[in-house]
Amino acid sequence: MKKLLSVVLSASLLGLALVGTGCGEKKELVMATNAEFPPYEYHDGDAIVGIDAEIAQAIADEMGRTLVIEDMAFDSIITAVQTGKADMGVAGMTITEDRLENVDFSTPYATAAQVIIVKDDSDIASPDDLAGKTIGVQLGTTGDIYAEEIENASIEKYNKGFEAVQALTQGKVDAVIIDNEPAKVFVSQNEGIKILDEAYTYEEYAIAVKKGNTELLNQINAAIEKLQESGKLQEIVDKYIVAE
Ligand code: ARG
Image 1 (cartoon, rainbow, N blue to C red):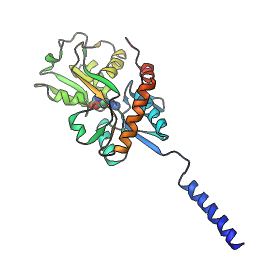
Image 2: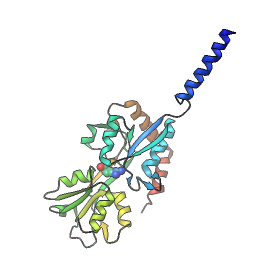
Image 3: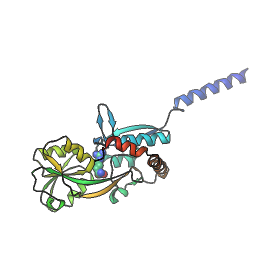
Image 4: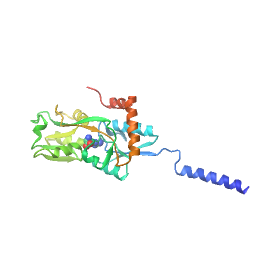
């Protein structure tokens, strides 16, 4: 009797312990992003939506984990991934040599370009005309990094890409260097500005994970491959980007 009781007791304690540790609940997959980057990530009411949000959700589904999105400044994302505050950075993030020293990147899931936005009546017609100009960028982005290389240019750094575009419409900067798809969105929302035909650079977007976390990286890469092969990735892109 005594023995039976203790068996029952330990079984129920075990049950409690399982509930307590959330066994059966899915482990979280925390994504760091900067939701100021339509159509990749942006706010829609209380929700963060966009291509990256949906790709991350599909990856989490593949891995059987619950996606949690942490919105932060763009230049905090790498640190969040390095310190483990987030499992992955998904933010239309371009693979660069510098960033590869601090994080590992997944296989690319998108190609992009840095483009130049100017006023309709601007005398800037190509990247060569940017020398000596005032250029608006989003802080810490590749647009920021490239602008720094332009001869005699003064760089105005904004927390949000949209703020750089606003500065352009207000005549505070002569041009904005920013990723092509957000550029299209911002230009469509503002009168009197245009995107130059000639792109500044071409780049690739990938997911950043903590250096050396090959287990997670392999899982993410496997999920990306699956999403590419099934056509799901293209489906997500087509939902947000209407082909010209
Ligand atoms: N592709 C650029 C970069 O990697 C800009 C990305 C900005 N992303 C964002 N979610 N605000 O620097």
